[in-house]
Length: 191
Image (spheres, helix red, strand yellow):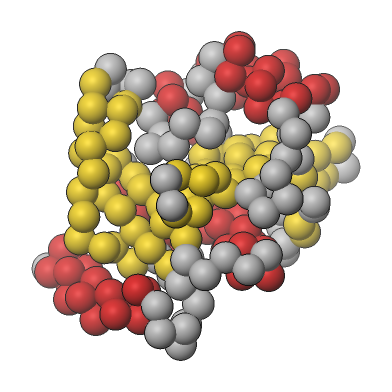
């Protein structure tokens, strides 16, 4: 499965990506601080990431920026199963942050998730990573008000992570109920 957005090309990871992914991981300790275990943190994780067979309903992508010299890998994005939920995760390499790549990739994968029949998507970010919350909010996710304890490789312990949720507008799902609550919470946080 492939996705083309305005600036990005999302594609599955290939074995040929292993060295580039390991280089990105080595230069960014935050790569191992995702609230999802889907992104590789070490050689064995990266090898598994580039060689595993994709589940059709839970695609995982490397995020690339096409250019004259090829397509530079700038991060990853994908869907995974977490208990009964479909969870979105993403990561952008440190040198590539602040360019809107995360929001663009997240929006593209959300559109794909709806076309695959998913009715609800959850996402999490650690409380000390407010930029991740801004990405999720900008892509339409809303806080549920829940803070879960998730393992953080950077903190080397369980650490609080905020939960977000997104459902198609007008679906009558959890997201419609939460929009009012989240808007009030977001206004309080902005104040």
